Image (cartoon, rainbow, N blue to C red):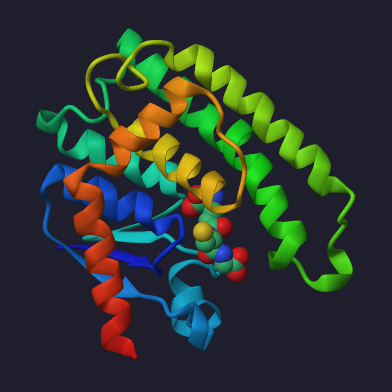
Length: 211
Ligand SMILES: N[C@@H](CCC(=O)N[C@@H](CS)C(=O)NCC(=O)O)C(=O)O
């Protein structure tokens, strides 16, 4: 059975969402940030970075959310959430996955680090304005890339939509404006996915059980 190490409202949502889309059974192992469990020796043995997500599948232990969802998509190819290696679609899938991490998420994470995540003495409030500008620039590129498509690769939902959707919802929660009409509709479409609702419910149930 696949085990996901995570915490609600973090990047582990990308993995639970993916597994729900795949219809796979999995265990959600709560790493309770409120109790400092991400820094426990037990968890550091799983992910030395002390971050979530991590995923265990038999002997394979993986970290990095994008790598995990790509692995899962390749493992269950019949679900067609990650295009076949070597195909043109796979090239586009990788392009938008890397774009999400290095352009869209990077700007948000800079905001997060300099607002609350870094130790106070390491925070540089002056970078916030630049990070917000970078996020808006990435949205403009995404607006062009999505165009009139329903999903980032066209008419069919894929795992890159999970990465993008999760990151856009994160941006909105960070009070960033998403004024592009096609992106607003895209987010609404993604938020309606039942697999996402099931992932949230599973994570929240794990947290409620702990308290
Ligand atoms: N690049 C990693 C980032 C993982 C990451 O930074 N996770 C955050 C939660 S969203 C975390 O665990 N932060 C705890 C910490 O930095 O101590 C991925 O995409 O999996």
